[in-house]
Image 1 (cartoon, rainbow, N blue to C red):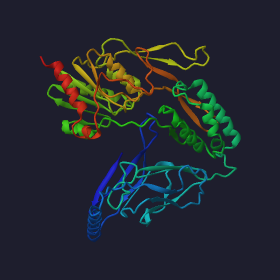
Image 2 (tube, rainbow, N blue to C red):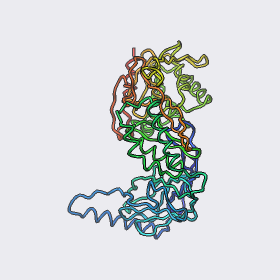
Image 3 (cartoon, helix red, strand yellow):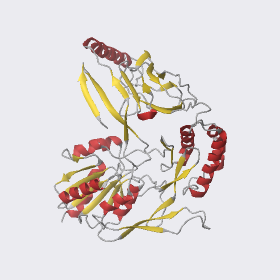
Image 4 (cartoon, one colour):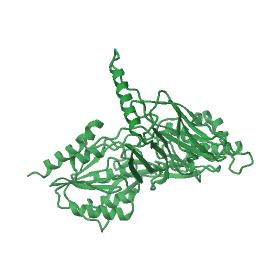
Length: 492
C-alpha cells in the first residue's frame, strides 16, 4: 500500500492507494485509489473543536450514571446494500449515521473499476449524513466501503471511529445489453451449481447442510440476477453458511469470496517490536535475534516467488549459528505449498511424508479416490539448520500454511506452540456455470499424516498458549514460551 502523507494546518492529510483484491485469492493484491481525508483545520477551528470536545466530556462526566461512548453505526445508505437495480442516473452516494459526527473527516473506501467515479469531494449534508458525488455507468457492479480499517476518518464528535460497512450494488442494465442475464440462463446456471456441489465439492457433507433447500430458498433472487456479478455475489452470500474460505466465485471482471468462520488472531507486530526493536523487516518476511542464542524468522505468506525463498535461505544462513530458532507463521494464511516445502527443506534432509488427502471422485463407488500421501523432497540448494526449532501458530494459519505446520511437525524435536490453526485446505477447482460466472470448489479432503481430517478443526499445537489481544500487543506470551522451551533445550 503506497502512502503519501503530509501535515497541513495541524491535520494529517493522506493520499494513498487501497489494495482491492479477493482475500480468497493468493495472487498479489491489485491497487486502486480510495477517498479518505481529514479536512485542514485553522487555528480557530482547532481551538473550537478542543473546547467542544472538553465540554462534551465534562457533560458526560456529570451524568448521574457512568457514561460510555457509543460507537457510531450506519443506519442507512443510498444505494442500499444488495440493490441490483440502481438507476445509473444516481449522482450521490449517501451514508447516514445514528449520531452526530465529526464534520472534518470522511472515509469512503474502495477502488478500481468497481468503485464509483467521483465528480467532487465529499461533504456533510447534515451532522449525520455524508455525501459523495459520483457518476455511475449502466449495468455495472459497484462496491463502496465506509470506515474500513485502517481508514477510519468517519468519527463521532467524541472521536470514536464508526463501525465499518461495505455495500454492494448494481446499476440497471438495458434489456438489449449483451451483458444482461435472462431468467433461463440463470435457471440453467442454478442446476449446474447444484450438480457441481453434489458431485465435486469435497466438503459437501461436513456441516450436513440442506443444499437443495438452500438453492430453492435463494432461487428467485438468483433467477432474477441482471448481470453476472449480481448472480455471483448472491451465490457468494448464500454460501457463507458453508464456512469454507476456499469457495469463491469469479466473473471476467470480479472475484467474490464466501467468507468463513470469524476467528481472533494471536499475532500483533507491536509485541514483536517490543521484544526485538532491531527486527529487520521486508514485505513478507522479518528476521532478527530474540537473544544471542535464539534466532527469529517471521513469514506472513507462502504466496512468494523464488527470490523470496532465496532471501529466506540467506536469512537462515545469518542465523545458522543460533542454537535455537523461532519460526513465526501466525499471520500466514497460505499460498504455494511448494514454496512452503522449499523452506521446510532447511530442516528435513531426507524425503519425508507429512500429510495425506483423498480426492472427490463421484465416478468411484465410494465417491473418493484412494489415500494420497504428500512427501517433502528436500531442495538440494537449501541451507541445513539442525538446532532447536519452535514454530508459532494460531487461528489465522490455514491452507498451505497448515501443510507447512505438518511438515515442521516431522522435524526431530521441533515444537509447535500456540492455538489450533484455522482448519481449511481445499485445492479448489473451477466449474463454469455458463452465465459468465465460475465457481471454485474444494476438490480434496485434507488429512494429517495419520489420516485425520482437520477441516473446521485445525492442526493442534504441541503446547497450547492462550493470550488476550492486549497481552500479545505488549508482551507476546507465545514468544516468551518459545524462548523458555528453547532455553530449556539448549542449556547444558
